[in-house]
Each structure stands twice: as C-alpha cells, then as structure tokens.
Amino acid sequence: MLNSVWRRIVIKVGSALISPDARGCSTRYLLAIARFINECRQQGVEVVLVSSGSVAAGRNAIAFTHQPLPINVKQAMAAVGQTEMMAAWSHLFDFRCAQILLTHDDLSNRRRYLNIDNTLRTLLANQVLPIVNENDSVATAELKVGDNDNLAAMVAILVDADALIICSDIDGLYTANPRTNAEARFIPRVEQINADIYAMAGGSHHAIGTGGMLTKIQAADKATRQGVDTLIINGQQTTSFDALLRGEAAGTLFVRQQDRLSAKKHWMLHSLKSQGSITLDSGAVQALLHKGASILAKGITAVEGQFDKADAIWLCDSAGKQLAKGICQYSATELQLIKGLHSQQIATTLGFCPSEVVVHRDDIALLA
Ligand SMILES: Nc1ncnc2c1ncn2[C@@H]1O[C@H](COP(=O)(O)OP(=O)(O)O)[C@@H](O)[C@H]1O
Ligand SMILES: N[C@@H](CCC(=O)OP(=O)(O)O)C(=O)O
Image (cartoon, rainbow, N blue to C red; front, side, top):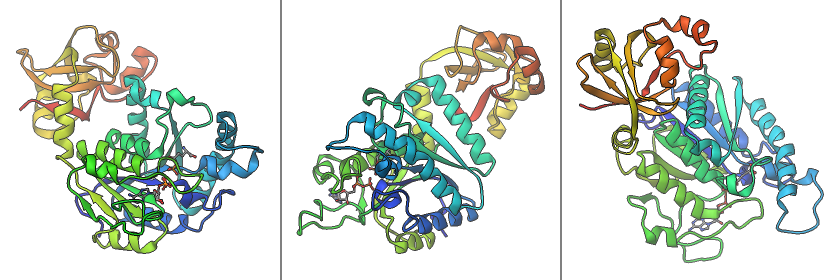
C-alpha cells in the first residue's frame, strides 16, 4: 500500500524516460510508470502527471544544424512532440487523459491560477488523468518556468498534493554527480534543504534533459516548504515503483517542512490581503464552521468592497465577525447580483456560471 497519508500526488516524468533515444516516444519506461499510476488510482490516490518530452519526442521531425538549438527550432519540435507524447500516454491507460499546457504567466496571474485550479479539480473529480507540460511552442523565455521540475512543484502546491514524485534516470540525490565523480555517495533522506544540499547539484549529462539535479532540488525546496513531501526516484527501474506501492522507501525523500494544510492556511491568513467581505446567513455559518463546506450564493446576505474574481475576502457572520478568509470565484459586482440565489440560477442571472460555489472549501482558511 502506497504511503497512506498521500491522497493526492503529482508525478513528474523527465524527457529521458519518455524519449530515451530522442527519436519519438518510447514505451520502454512508460509502461512501468503507467502501471504505477494505475495502481495508485486503484488505491484511491488521485494523480496529476507532469510530463516532459515534447522537445525530445519531436527532435527528429525538425531539421537543425547547430547546438544549442535556436528557440524557434525547439518550439517547432515541441509542437510535434507534444501530440506524440500525449498519444503515447493515452494508449497506456483505460481511462481518459487531459492535456494542460501552462506558462509561468498562467501560474502568476491569480485569475488564471484559479481557472487552472478549477479545471484540475474538475478533471480529478471525473477520474480523468491531467497531463501537464509547459506550453513550449508558444511561451517565450521570459514567460517560461523553464523546467518541469519547478513546474511540477508549482502544480503540486496548486492542487494541494501530499507528495511530488520526480521520476528521473538516476536513483536520487548523490553528494556529487555520480556520472562524473566516482566518490559520490547516495543520500536516501534530506531533512532540510540548505546550501550544502544545493552545492551537490550538477547539471544534466544528456542534451535533452533540463537542469540536472539543481532544478530538482529547487523543486523539492519549493514543495517541501509548502508541506509537500518530495521524492526523486529512478523511473527506469520498476523496483522503485514496486517499493513505493509496498509503502517502502525508494529514491531520495525530501521531508516536508510543515503540515500542508497549515502551510496553506498560514499563507491565506497572513500573506493574502483581503479585498472585501461577504456576510453569511446562519445556515452558511454552520456549514462553514462545522462541516467544512463550500460557500454557495444562497447563503450570502451582503457583499462589501470592490473585489475581483480570485481575490481574497473575509467570510463574516451576521454580526460582522470575521470567521474565515477565502478566495472568491466571483467579483463583488457579480456577487451583488447572485447573492441569495440557488446555484442553478447563476447562469440565467449572469449569463455564465464559472463555478457552482462562490468560495470552494479548499480555498477557505478558518480563523479559529
Ligand atoms: N548530485 C547529483 N546527484 C544525482 N544526479 C546528479 C547530480 N548532479 C547532477 N546529476 C545529474 O542529473 C541528471 C538528472 O537530471 P536530468 O538529466 O535533467 O533528468 P530529467 O530529464 O529526469 O529531468 C542525472 O542523470 C545526473 O547525471
Ligand atoms: N517542457 C519540456 C521539458 C523541460 C524539462 O524540464 O525537461 P526534463 O529535465 O527532461 O524534465 C519538454 O516537454 O520538452
């Protein structure tokens, strides 16, 4: 049984596993990874896949004369390889897959962040496997995250994952790059990421990988700070997956620095500035405090302030007492029109209905 604390995981698969020869996609390593994903889902664990490989898979379709590859050549390769990579994964599963292509801009813009979050939540609720990659064929260098290790960490934080599993072509973190340093020793567990850990990182040994160990440590640093356990495992060896499925150790574990929920709660209560407030009726207050429920338009009696969709707002009782902070799916202007209405009436009133709930329960931090 996979670690029983993990209910939702993000699995990141590097280019070397998808396109080991940089000539289209290969099932050589993907079969075992797909079996692992299938097994996790069978155990009731939700999975989001972050898959590299679009550039590597499309590499032999586009002519090039010199290295490093010019950006337009890489973008064209990615456009070819992305569809091949999606097809390769889709053929390995009995369930549906969905493609999500992101840029850094999408993740830093709060409204788009919320849209991505809603889409991923809906896909998971419908048992669809989201497959995320950077939108390489359109994003320019300044709009990019740049590597899928960091992208996977951002996705893991976004979807409130319990764990991030980075599948690479190496067993995990060594004290130095073992391909160039025979003295390098394997590190099974990292309690705290500090300058000494960063100093161990070397680059990638092949032309198709991005970042080598450095981007993996950066990703682990980001994710563990937000309460996400991070693992680097060898995705070329089925024994890594077998061990994880038995609940045993595999690869290098970077231990989460705090509880995931308290990390999110702390961020919402102390870093997110509130832009307004809504007043809840007694039924909504009970549902919020005692059932951890989402807030529906029906339970809202008043709206204060000029906030936009995706802004943070206070959720208050009828006496004006602040009970919680939440991220709102609607603007103040829209809420003025739909407050007190049933969710089914939102579309007829506004002409659109981006969300049936006004504040989703995963986006609420209770004060008490
Ligand atoms: N300290 C280290 N420990 C382990 N691997 C390292 C280290 N420093 C550099 N590397 C290199 O990082 C590579 C993995 O990164 P990369 O090639 O970018 O793979 P991926 O495509 O999985 O992201 C390893 O194959 C190894 O050559
Ligand atoms: N987005 C790129 C992958 C970038 C990347 O980080 O690659 P890798 O180091 O192999 O995970 C692609 O699909 O080719």
